[in-house]
Length: 210
Ligand SMILES: Cc1cc2nc3c(=O)[nH]c(=O)nc-3n(C[C@H](O)[C@H](O)[C@H](O)COP(=O)(O)O)c2cc1C
Image (cartoon, rainbow, N blue to C red; front, top):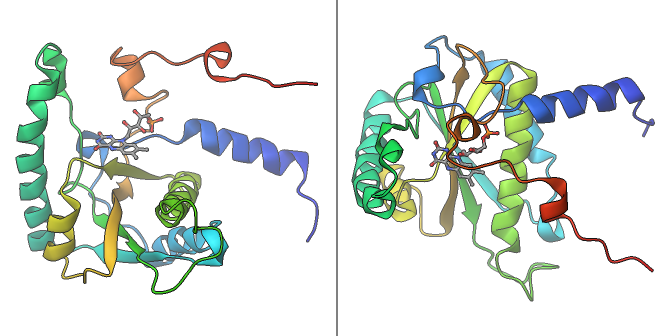
């Protein structure tokens, strides 16, 4: 394989820094070209996976009635969540999903292994983490194509699996809303709204040197 040049690495850094979580107030209804959707999935297939197990399964949802069922589950789960943030009334003003607004939803499942997986013998979650690596690849590839993606986690995984008619062999890892956007926010919305502060380097990095 050829060496990657500086320009490409700068482009990658730019894509990483400008990726944003996109929610329903920011999706446009413009459909996504199928070739571009395939490029996004292709990016997932290059993700690292424990023991090269590639334990992912994608369900691509465009059907309105299915999105509505997923949205109903979101509403139920959201209602349960509000009591956790009683002292922060801004919580109820946040838009936390784009299920119906995004032209495409992608449910990412983890396929539970039928045999031992190299590298997954001590830490059972490694397969699910591999699916997360695939999701991040998709998120970045989508951003490079000026397509937005948002992760919705206020959902009951089993319910979503049943709505989508997926067997118990699989576990939902991520539910993604995908579509063109009105504008990519410059920084995380939860930073702009002061929900959380950005952590600094000193806080999160420790060195163990000789
Ligand atoms: C595992 C995971 C789950 C998330 N779930 C939600 C969610 O349910 N609703 C939501 O609005 N954002 C969700 N997000 C998006 C985060 O809020 C967002 O990534 C974070 O605020 C940083 O903003 P940015 O992605 O625009 O940089 C999720 C992100 C991750 C990585």
